[in-house]
Length: 94
Image 1 (cartoon, rainbow, N blue to C red):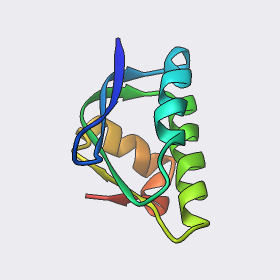
Image 2: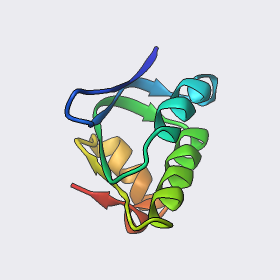
Image 3: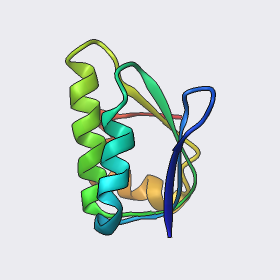
Image 4: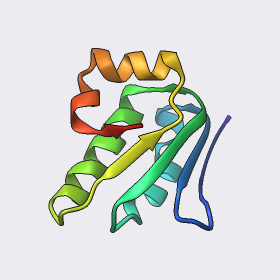
């Protein structure tokens, strides 16, 4: 199961396993971001390469207008994936 929601404060909340089958929902929400935004990973247990690709695409879109993503609440496993792929260099991870 995967869920992506935009919270009242503008934070994007990821819940469950973000895999290719859920990319349409994720693309819809991430595609609506036009300013710097925080994405809360605290309830995300897995992210596939397609999920990483969506985040990278969103980050590049935002950077072209001087904005970016801040990623928070990552589990050790997800954080390690970002380190291995060197996405921790691309994103602001808190």
